[in-house]
Picture (cartoon, rainbow, N blue to C red):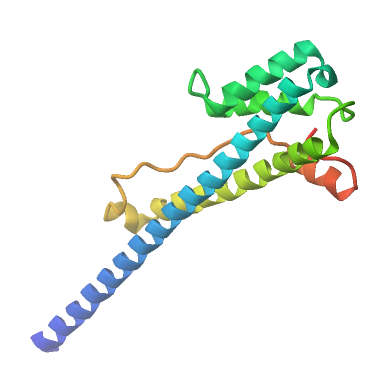
Length: 182
């Protein structure tokens, strides 16, 4: 083969490498945007759940018990802005407290109970979507060539958000016609 053919072959290989790099960078950017959107949706549902729990504790303390209402309000406030910075722990504590509530809350409007149950389900779904986006991003960044070329190496890897949302329990009760979220 002549040197012209070798140069053409090297040019084609270089062009393929550049095209692959651009495609991978675009994919990484899209995945990071997907992680950001999923986090926004998850955070909105977590904030909503904390707000509803706080509303339940403050406006209907007799329904949940005055002692438990104080704890529920404190846990909801901590979930909105964790004092120690551990959001997962604060959300787990709030979720456990909500699950321990009686299924019958006398005096509490059905709309509030249904809204809280629906939000609890949406928290579980939003967490799954977020963790799926994180998994896909981490998987692409772990491939050999993105690591070799240090694609997005300066950006931190997204973290999973692991809380005990008991989504399986919640969805099975919803499917059987029972109330969800407890």
